[in-house]
Length: 338
Image 1 (cartoon, rainbow, N blue to C red):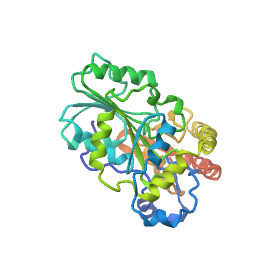
Image 2: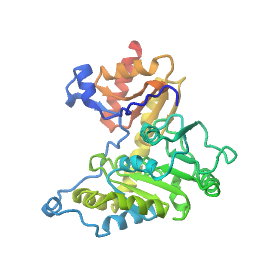
Image 3: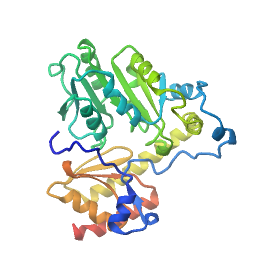
Image 4: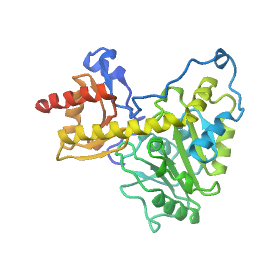
């Protein structure tokens, strides 16, 4: 992938860098760099025993996840753990991933000696070879583009005949569960799906995610987890959050309304630019140095966005009503400086 180094990727949420660069106190920043929902699931006070006991595999979290996602789920300490483990499960081979995609995949698959095959559109059956791996982030991060479950199922069926493997990261899918691939899968297919509580639930700090899909992959990862991989507080919170179905419905309504308002703000400021969106962020391709200039102009007003300089892309996360009002003012204020 041209323009990318072998160094470990940088990420959003790095407010320490913003504070050091711009000299604005941490408390004065509006952080729109992560794509984390601005309305987190409301964590209640936890019983004392949750902090005192070692985590037990009593099945409650697994049951809650299966009921929420509609498929058996392996709890893991954040989907990042799985991203680092998956490349070690197979010998070096061709690995397809979107040219612009979450860079942790590129980094860890390269670390294991795999050959990366960047794509803009999904690879077609005639492009695939024996043992190929296809990785799809759906909706994609950072572009916001999305593939239908039927299109992904067609890729999975092509890979099955080639003894290949499809990996689908659905970290941003909870806002639109009807677009998930999970209902179309059976556990024998060579498909692995990742889910996370970090984005939709706004609980990135508890580092809890799930692996779903192919039973053999889940079994292998379970052996690698060892004891106490997901902390007892994380298990307790995740179980409650996954079973709070009324909150899920309310959250989807909040995200739909908020994302529409965010998109309208950005479209008004960039009427001639290519803009894509998910329910948790908008993504702009701003060539000729514009992305870096806008990132800087917003940062000078205490708004931290996610800059992808090698792709000339700026990603702006969703904010609550007060944050969206502040963003609108900052976008208008930055017009004369960019």
